[in-house]
Length: 310
Image 1 (cartoon, one colour):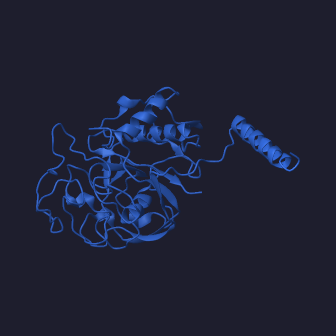
Image 2: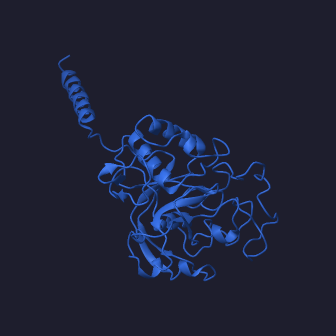
């Protein structure tokens, strides 16, 4: 008994410390869940190295990005519903019906930028993490704000910047057109998109919508993880649904933005989308392609989230 007493005393002190931490709300951040992967810090060449896209993809520049973790898959309808149900019961104005989806394993669609941001905060609070987004000093939970403040050092979930998105999509490989590294061509065997003969790098033997997923009704999304991952272990970085980014869109952003942890212009007419979609062409599936959309819903819009690495 004498030899065991220090161990028992240590356990009692540990329990007491945990209880105190719970009461004070100072528990350390939870580790990244297994559905997220680490994107290491480092520099990469951002932009269209092939010189074949739009002017807003130039000039190609070296961008340094701090380490972060990213969702392995696009947010599914099942995960949306799980978090949104919690959100609706905890002061948020979003719920399961705020997003659509063709099935539980398909990506959530018809998600506005504002809804994605509020959902990110709800996911953070549900996981007992510090939410990233606020409006007038309060956690962003209700109404519409296309310009919330972001606490970049918070432990919670947030939308990726487009620099983070492109670094992640490239999978650790430079100078490639798509998220894979063994070829600069695309086919239906690699992504869910609308293929045609307009682009020489679109060599799919099947044309039009993906034949495996063009069953009515639209959208013709595919279950997440239906195609091979990229070098970082991320799925569906090309096709299925466009993914919201944090950044306001700027046509000349690349010529003026900083070379380290770039976060886009201070304002704009729409937010950046990346990755292409089930109804879009091979052009949009390229890792350097940038699209702009108002903070509104559409059946080809989804998202995935990131967390700043400790």
